[in-house]
Image (cartoon, rainbow, N blue to C red; front, top):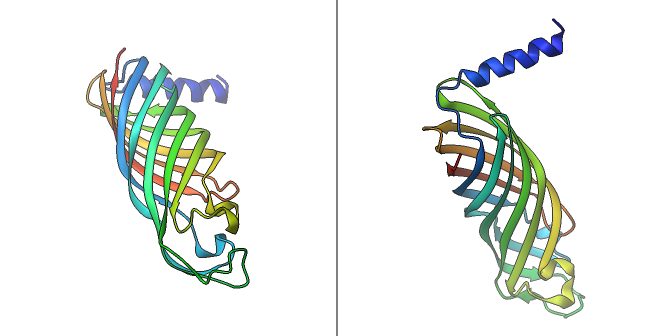
Length: 205
């Protein structure tokens, strides 16, 4: 038997040993946790100092289709944390000739589509990895919603690659839970974002 055939047989044996494999077909779920959007003072043109709170509560929902115990496609939405930017000082000269800005914030909306590869283990436990793309909308408000100072000071929407890993537990064929880490990559004025979200899903089977 070839090495590839042996590997395939081994993976199938592991998958078949799962006590509570989630049912193939459509599923829907919710997720809640925390994220960190790596905004830094130096990313904003003319900004010399500020206090930026990059981490906070994040949550959303997802919908997918499981083709087999090892493969699924999924789309989702996460409302990221509201990144606050305070005590802003600006270098002069600048387009507005201001030395400071009022406090501002960036609200993050993240839509994504990904392909998930799953490895069911024993007793309902499983591991997963995913790759895909995320569409990130960064809504600015307050002092940093200022078109004259540059592109990062205004609302931005960008597509960016994403990747993630996770672990799951199947209560039965219909109800599963898990913990997933996702990383979206820096694209233009939008920094990379790290998310750690717990989820609960229902598989229609």
